[in-house]
Amino acid sequence: MRQAFGGEWTQRKLAVLEKYLKAYMTIMRRNPTASKTFRVTYLDGFAGSGIRYSPAQEDTLEVSAPWAEDFSEADVREFHKGSPRVALELDLPNLKPFDHYIFVEKNRNWVRELRSLQQEFPDRDIQIVEGDCNEYIRKWCSSLQWNDRALVFLDPYGMQVEWRTLETLAKTEKVDLWLLVPLGSAIMRLLVRRQPPPESWQKRLNDLFGTEAWLEHFYQATAVQTLFGDEEEIIRTATFDTVTQFFVQRLQGVFKGVLDQPAVLRNSKNIPLYVLCFAASNPKGAPTAVKIARDIAEGLHGS
Image (cartoon, rainbow, N blue to C red; front, side, top):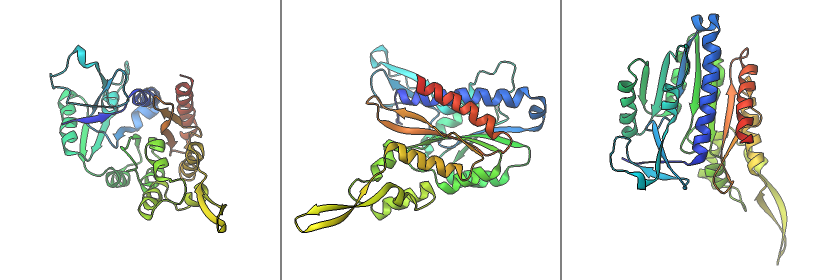
């Protein structure tokens, strides 16, 4: 079984997650009232197999499972933690870890690999869910109790996250969310230049944005001179920045606090592949959460 992973941008994404995990759990555990009151969950919505490798000079690579003993120095491969392992191995001296870990994955082969984490970390309360992330999260949100708090990380392979799932998370008022949005890797590819996208692509964009309003924001009619006189043509005016800000504004409409300048993850050619968005649903905790997320994101931009 082989799984493709990203390059340096993936490490930057995981670095952001790890820094926020540390800050989040430090707040939740060092505050005596919060530590005694809240049951804290980490939910990874597209957990994959739990591991990744990256080559020294490439953006992507297919690799075998971590226990496969078929690589050597000449392979120039470097093992890196996937997001589930980052959460499980979080260095929190003298602090209690998350009360519960939920890893959701649809791929049955990767689910089998995730289950090995339960044996590797027997002192952790780990739940492996095989199924659709959107469906599971919406059910999970309805089960949350007054003393539940959660950090949710959604790292989809494409445009699988549905807007109604994000709305459901926002309504809990119990969740901090990091969401990887496939800006250059998917969205901009669907936003064709010389005409509106075909109907099937528009539906996918509607599901992601939760509205059809993106069409009038990203396209406009313009007069084009032809041999037969002026004709009206609808062209794309959207840029990486305008699409990002549109999505941020959509998040601001449902969450209590949103990072206004998401972290941008670029490939080796400096093209924005993804934006890493942050949103907090708890009215009391949102200002602090956004400030921490902003400091981490600015550090990423600075690097």
